[in-house]
Image (cartoon, rainbow, N blue to C red; front, top):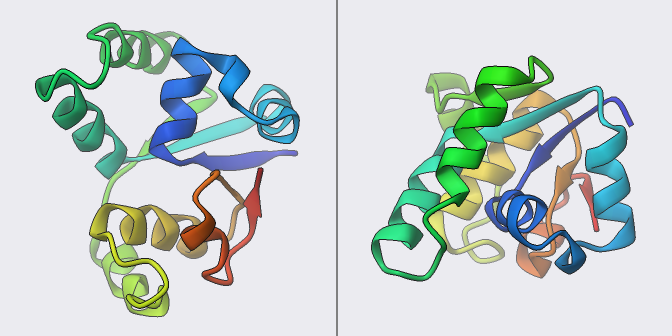
Length: 128
């Protein structure tokens, strides 16, 4: 696998509890030449930390890997990705952060590492 985008839960599990990832998901991340993160995932991680639902070390670990590993990239939400959101059916994927992540993968034409069955049903390439 050369390039992937990680869903928020895949990022969290990769750093904090990799055993929660499927074997396929873990292998896709480990073998990827380039690992992409949608910027909305950073917002979700901060939100989960603020609510006390996520350990405080998740964001610092992600910051550390962005600083030290050029294979990890942050993909900002821009106008082009925002327009692709219309291709992710709201009835299939109702949560806006999930639609943004799915649209990012669709726009980049790369597989999304996700366990989310709603996103998997949205006609984009997924790995789990």
